[in-house]
Image (cartoon, rainbow, N blue to C red; front, side, top):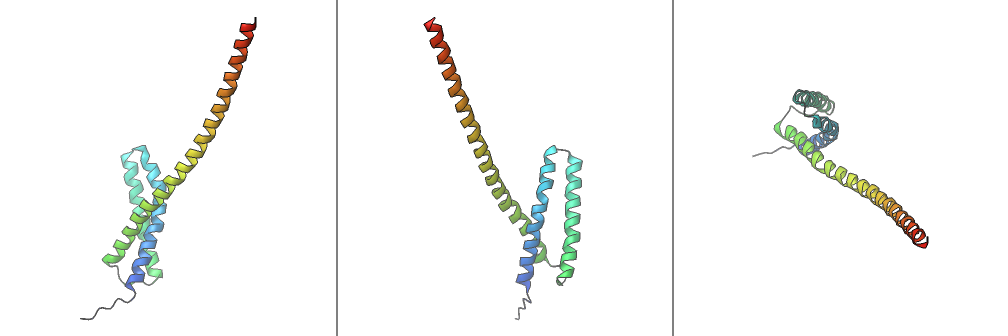
Length: 131
């Protein structure tokens, strides 16, 4: 039995990277899906996958891939999945870090304001007691 891979592993990796790149392009569509308009969600998904398909055929034609095979489509889907999982985690950590920095600064300013307010109230109380 002869098994000839003929660069199938590299083609698979190219398809995974293609899917990962397009996974990043899918993120703005996810943001628009928050509006809960069903026909808009369907339209956005359909437009995304049409653009994905057209660009994949252009990509595979320029890289001289052999005919479309199941492992190629699986590679694109795996790339989309990896991109969604990893990029979303990185983005969530980044947003959390920014939130914590802003929250810390706001709390520091509130502490300063509360300290000034307490001093002001104590001064007023002393003046009232002195009179």
